[in-house]
Amino acid sequence: MQEADKVLLRKFIDKEFTEKEYERIQELLQLPNAQEVLEELTRGDWVQEESTPNDITPADAIRVKEQLFAKIRKTQTKKSSSVFRLMRYAAIFTGVVILAGLPFYFSVDKTEDDRLATDTNIPAILPGSDKAILRLGDGSTVSLSSADEGKIIKQDGIEIRKTGDGMIIYSPEKTVASEIVYNSLETPKGGQYSIILPDGSKAWLNAASSLTYPIYFNDSERRVKMSGEVYFEVAKLPSNTTKGNVPFVVETAKQEVQVLGTHFNVNAYADGSFTETTLIEGSVRVIAKESGHAVLLRPGQQALLDKQIRVQSANVHEKIAWKNGEFIFEKDALGNILKQLARWYDVEIDCPEHLQRKKFSGIVSRNMPLPTVIEMIRSTREINIEIKGRRLIVSE
Image (cartoon, rainbow, N blue to C red; front, top):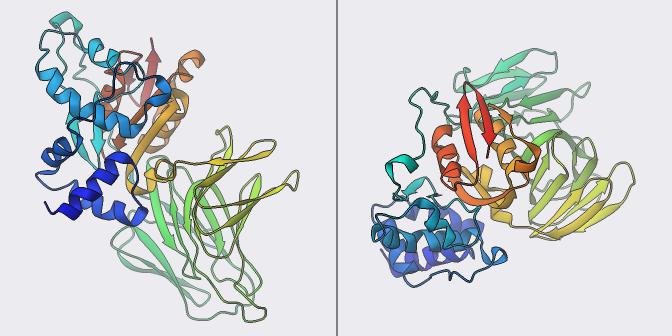
């Protein structure tokens, strides 16, 4: 592996990479010698036993994982709980860490009576996939998962096409229509989809999300409505009547996000504690509908809206991990983690409230079957999770 590529992997371990570099890093992690190079780069990066919970991050977890590989091989008679004592942060599930789809299994040693139970009757609950419903202006619907690649439909001078990589594209043939026509893209639990809007802006919808938009934009405002979670890359659209670009507005149940051209993520699930807006590039203004209070975000910041808006720094890679095919949890409450799993794998959750507050960190590929992900969490010995049908039952 070339030295420049090793530098990129070192940046990945230290969580100091850019979004552009991450594309190349994902390619490097698929190489046959990726694990060998990671072990070389992390040799000596040991997290001491004195580390406190506040010291542990996903980057630390990756370093710990590499060191534990060697240590576990030397401790064949010890129970798995000893492994996690080394971290002093019991809720980190580095029992399995997934890096861009590469599983690293800790074959922790357990006595026969101490092994995690394996139920051969557990259903093979597979991860979500590209599936969505396109709802047209006349109320008719198109199932995009079963629609053929190519032109889906033509309405009011707009051609809608489906690509081979799970995206629909709006190609306007005219800019004026007799009346505004709205379409909606809706993903179910266990689904995701992406779209190129008539102005060239791109949107990625996470599971259980929706985006409503006009099939053409006028010259005064580009307004869309959403629920769930959507990542936007907004194209700049020069105005024909005024100086500057046509504003792009994202409306949710509780707020508006005003933007000219930028990359950002909005998480507005109805069962969430906050409406969360995270800015990756450019600038946006977030306005609370009820109070009218507005804040301006800079890249790397997020706005959390409940009754009021507050601004804080954000782990950008964690917030848009879903778009890149991963779950990244950094000291996340179990309740929040389970909600994400429920949406992606289309399952129901039974979890006592006091267990929902437990904190976990980890990196997991969204392409893994649910039983594998559950086994990772169970390996912490902090909680037990059973799969019954399409229901997860959590207990101590």
